[in-house]
Image: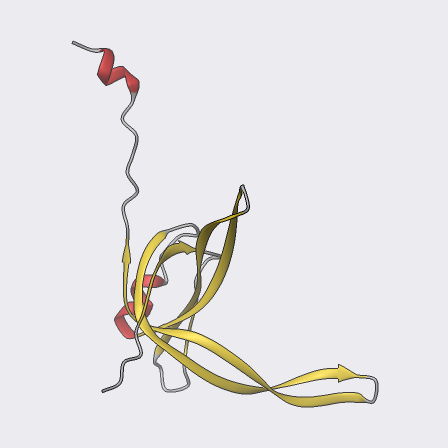
Amino acid sequence: MFLNRITLIGFTGQEPKTFATPAGKEITRLSVATTRRYQQESEWKEKTQWHDCVLYGNAAQYAANLPKGSHVFVEGELSYREYTRTIESESGAVNVQWPVAEIVVESIKILDRKRKESNEKEGAA
């Protein structure tokens, strides 16, 4: 048995980027931030990690309209790939294989943030 499953709850970063492949397949790319709080000695610290996400088809169309800072629930699988990137070195331009880790999203949902009730309602009788 094998399982490659990623579940994230976090906030979207910059506006999603949507484009189409030469075959016309719609793709949306976005980043999702997750933050872990931990205590180091007597001080609380936070570490935020950014996750690159790629969506296809209906999920891509849905995600294309998400505003920056949306609270989202994302499910998918972790994928690794490489592409050739040109970097400058002392001896000139060099092509290198550049590794990429990304989440291929199968499902994405916006999570509702709880809204604080105004104090006016508490005072009214």
